[in-house]
Amino acid sequence: MDTIDKRILEDLVQNCRITFQDMSRKYGISANAIRRRIRILEESGVITGYQIELASAMVGCETILGMIWTDGSHDEVELVDRLGASDNIIAAAAYSNGLFYFIGEYTDWNELLGVGSLVRTLPGSERVEIHPLVIDPGDRIDLTPIDLRVLSSLTDNPKKSVVDIAAETSLTARRVRKTLKRFTDSMAVRFAALVELGAAGSIPFIVRTAFDETAKSAHEVVDWIRDEYFVPLWQTFISASEPVVFALFSTETLTELDSITRAIRNAEFVDTVKVTVSTYHGYFRGLRSKTLAQLIQNAALE
Image (cartoon, rainbow, N blue to C red; front, side, top):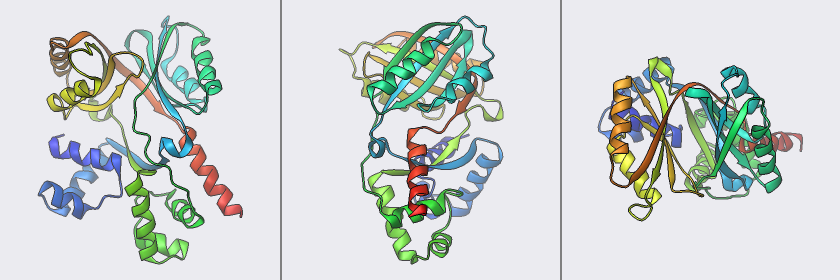
């Protein structure tokens, strides 16, 4: 994977409905070359599919990142699936040395308490750490019946063409384009590619970086990591409760993994670095996906 592949993936994660022509103009290569690159990413398993999700502001939810240290007695797949059975957990992963990470969503303190109780009472759970995250919640818009008709048409294929959406919804193509633009301009509804970091033998790992916030802010740390390691870096999470940044990487070799972590550890503003390698992960429908599905279902019954 090169820099153009990575930027194409970032575009598709932000809006998988972006056109080949728009990306062609953006990266200075032909639309057919963009199409071929995306097809290779799909066929290699890097892109596993596409989904629709509401922004956090649309549901009024907050996001957390949690870590569970266990005694190592668990089957990784079983425990990840057990975490995913919770309505509030949207992703979970097994890492080295009996450590599990999870991403959760909650709308009130009772739900947050429920997640905390669930992970603390898991058999073999020895210690739990939960970080509220700093994220962009997006905007909140009121979804009209026409909005929901368009979204219903897209549930089986978020990349469906405007012509096909118009035919299914009995709307004009102009009205469909206007509706889709409203979604993407507000970022209230996202059409996102799903990425598999462990595809093609790559090694996903998380670098937990505690930093000196008198030297750099959390956003400056994230910008530095992104500038230094754009291609292997996939996602960053900023803790709202501690000067800590979690950076999710994917590399081809352990040598590259070691090089990245050593360089981050040696940065003058970094206090400590802890690295864990992922062995298994799962993604699950959370509050935002379930809320959208319920809104579409309710609209169909009216």
